[in-house]
Image (tube, rainbow, N blue to C red; front, side, top):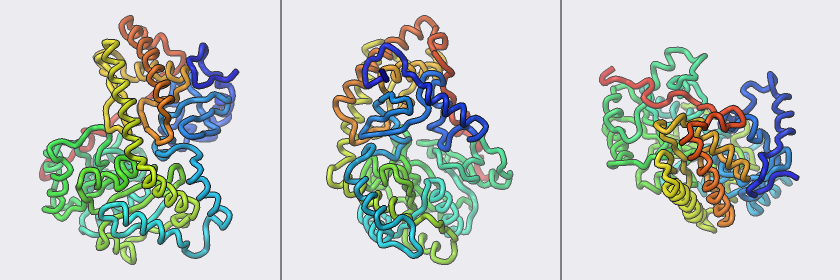
Length: 444
């Protein structure tokens, strides 16, 4: 019998996952198209590697094991898997065609809808991935300001200008690295110290898990206004999750450009660059940003249906309520067990579980907790990417699973046997360093 959403006696049988994994060796570099979905982010030997089906907040792997999914496609599935209203919109469009030889009416209809719900979205252009529109925004900023340097904070995709400031930057010329620099979130001095006459834009995720403090976002807006710098919000995570209008609506701070993907189409591939009409006008003739699949109609239909669903059911409010139950529930259990070295933090729509290194190796502690959650029918990667379809019963089960799994972790930590209790290879970090890295000294 396959593992179900239950307190299973055994870890899941992942034979078929492992067969596919072996077939991919040497064929698919790094095994995966998305690093956060790859085998290094899960306990190799316990966790499933390939998923086959999803419905609402549940998924089934290729071996038939069922799990509550707390990852939700690494962000895009804010509503859930196989939502009838959204799938029906995709099917209806599929009957008419996918990609056409001329523009499609949905390009206009969706742009009008985005302009209606997103602050400062005076103009809209589409692409397929977040990295595309982020890089387009950087190019736009350079064209608008006639300056070259970029100050960034957070994760912004795989393109040269950003990966140059990480420790996975092989193949990127030094001249590119010399134009991109990082600053620290909530550290306005690290921004001020980096400003010179050649900074074209400040780009950041409006929040990752930390809340902005001391009017940090408002201060960034002021700095940009005073220095002819464009402020760019990378809203891949905040967009259509924290509020219908994203972080600009939630925090009351307008960016010059705001970039969206992930949750806007509930799993279909689309990305958008939005912002000031005067800046976006450079895309008419001056700045080249075109792609064959930008107007692909299935994703546009899904975008329209997703936004309509969010508005109809006040989805962000429901997501926040469910996320709060998970966050507060985790912290309550950890407190009751006397585990002051682990906590859950972040905005309710997306929270993260933290481990204090003073208690042991954080990756090993995360791996053991993940291992035990998977045994209990919860696919967990350290985050709560909460979706609308997650039920109260699902949350009850997750919290009950946390109570058991955290008790196991506590005993392992106290006996210094965390690594010994792992039944597979522990998880690895995606980047070894992205903060306090390639910082730009004052007046350089």
